[in-house]
Image 1: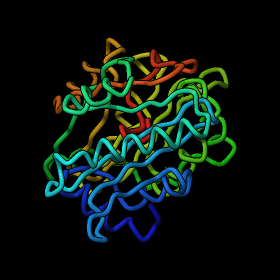
Image 2: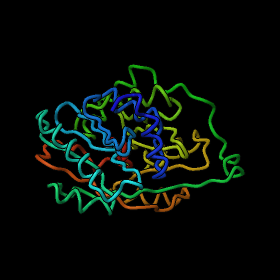
Image 3: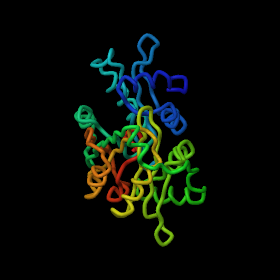
Length: 280
């Protein structure tokens, strides 16, 4: 895949109703231009798959899309196998992804195991409801030294350094980057992206319910979209309660899966929401 294929990728993700933007496609290409693939029929892109590696510890596979007119022909499986072969050849010891219920059996046949369950939650607000939130004025995000400390804290939570990805997201959407500090340490933090139809909260990380509530409330005050989505591991006992109190409703399940040696699982016990199924 190259940058010239991004419009074709956008067409496929629009057909599937996904929330990613051209910036998200470019993030994959910036991080792994040789590890992103397209399938073509008669010179037209009919499928995509993208990979991104984190410190050589593990890699993510995402954006596996196939044009409905060409489904059932093995194109998606061929793209996935191409991505896996690329990562295996690069010596990446573990491959991760977030699977839909329909995709989970396919990934299981390719050697992927379940790690934990994730649920997508969606908040829909009316213009009148948005006007009543008392949103905060635009924010330029944390200064660079504090952003770096957030990225360092995230390395422990995620299991590897993804600072380049987080800095890119902050650069495009600084108003959503937020952190709470306790005794000079990061107690909670959140990032966010403006998707094609909704603002996406994640990663959302907190040491406790109090700090999770405060960062969620801050994000919702800064979001000016009628729709907000969050992909939440069902590990923290209070996450579902906070989402429901804020008006979110459950949308669909996902399963975090891995293939290979999962030696760097990070700290899912601190996660309230992941960055997104495409990035982890």
